[in-house]
Image 1 (spheres, rainbow, N blue to C red):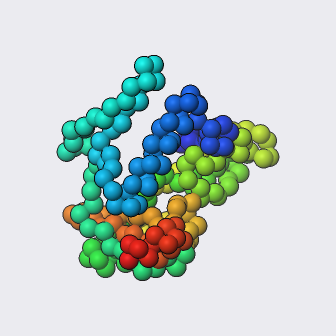
Image 2 (image 1 turned 135 degrees about the vertical axis):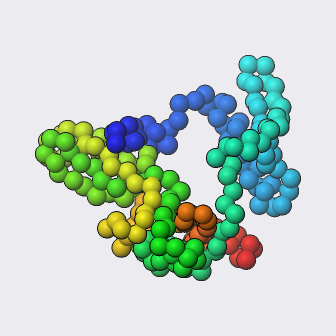
Length: 209
């Protein structure tokens, strides 16, 4: 796995190359849409907003849904688990999926790739990280022993056999209140760690209950 999965310092610090004026305008609109959504008002959901800075014009656009686009794929079933991500290990979640899907051939897929290890090709030293891809700086990818750039080993799923199944879900480098997808040969289920709702949503968690 290439070391380009590591974030460069500027991006890690939250700095994105853009024009400050345009980014502040778009940020303001995003916040406005979020506030409207929270209060149940109509939003731009499913549509796009174009701001053209040269002549200071803006307009909305309608997008045609592509039924084959995997980015808009919807899970047929999502089960809200009462546990938090600190209550379950990855293997316990896998065991739950084995029962729900009535199969031992289950794969739990993560919402994003996770950096499992950094391995130095020169001295073969390994470091376990369990951090989301993009959250580790480029410089931290260097071997502390010899300064060589280490190789990233990333993971995105668990099939019940890997050693990291004993880790709590909070120890995988994934966010709380996340969805894990369990797949068998002919069926799939999404698991939402609803026990994290209060920590992530605050007072909004009670409103949605």
